[in-house]
Amino acid sequence: MIRTFIDSGVLIDAARGEGPQSKTAMDVLADPDRVLLTSLFVRLEVYPKVEFNSFPLQRAFLTEFFMDSGLEWRRDLNSIV
Image (cartoon, one colour):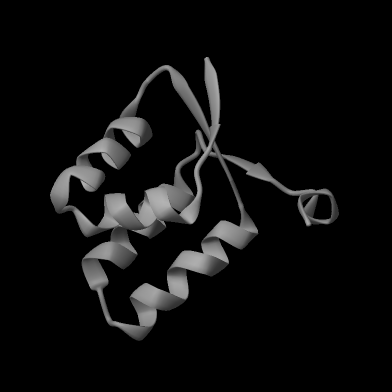
């Protein structure tokens, strides 16, 4: 398994659902040979934009991503900073 930390750029491209970057991002997120990792900082970076701009489909996509039971959370915030 490949452990991959998903940054906000990948999530934004995937959530937009348009263009070649979106397809590449979705390919990474859907890869069955990857274990996806994230942190609270990534979540804090992407949610305000979709809330402010009122993008309900993008918000639903991000909610589904962050609620995925296979997603690993990096919880030691001090070591991340």
